[in-house]
Amino acid sequence: MAERTKLTKAGYKKLEEELRYLIDVVRDDVKRQLAEARAQGDLSENADYDAARGKQAEVENRIKEIEYILNNAELI
Image (tube, rainbow, N blue to C red; front, top):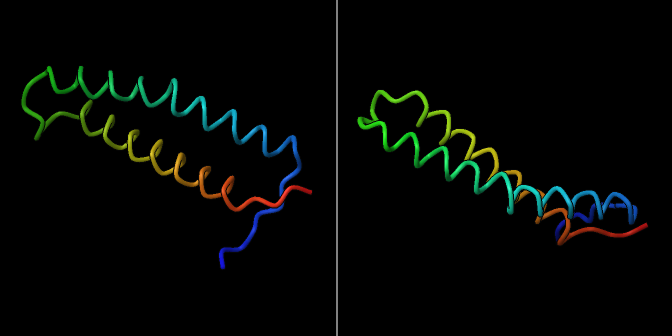
């Protein structure tokens, strides 16, 4: 069984808000950055593309982390 994370109602709400922001705002911004970088041409030497991919990985990992915490949270 997964270890339960103890959260206050305020902490839970804060994580929910962060999750919504990451999904609704940041994810779309990263998609736009990737599209702009792809439009520059050769991806093998494109620093903007590499940076956008790195940011995308960070955002997706944080989304998964928050979803896991919220799904296994114990309100105190």
